[in-house]
Image (tube, rainbow, N blue to C red; front, side):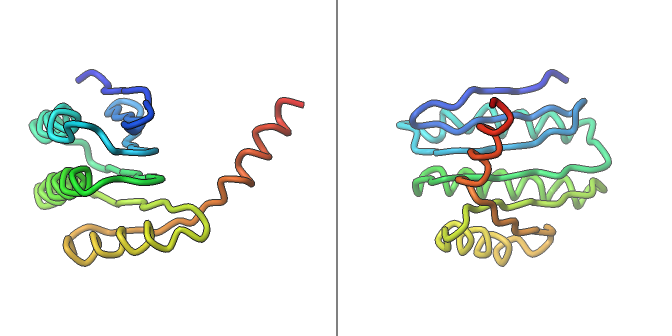
Length: 139
């Protein structure tokens, strides 16, 4: 199964789904003009994964912002991951949110209530601190 990787744009998130490497990540901003069209290949990729599932999935979500249409598709992804878990895959969701972004934290908490079968881990990060560390490595 081939990896599914999409570079971020101004309106779509970075997507990195790689069964072989064990990387499952959606990150950035998600305000696509057609959310259904954008998320359909992601949902299809997860469907393909379910035909020959892995034993462990640590799926990371690190959104800066997403619109209502994206929110619905993220929920569909979570439902598919819950289905994988019911079939024996150990699934954990790492919901990452920027320091002081209480809205993104609350959205993740809402998802965790809606889909109780999945283990959600909430992780706060500091974007400024990450940028400073990256710049320090360059110097």
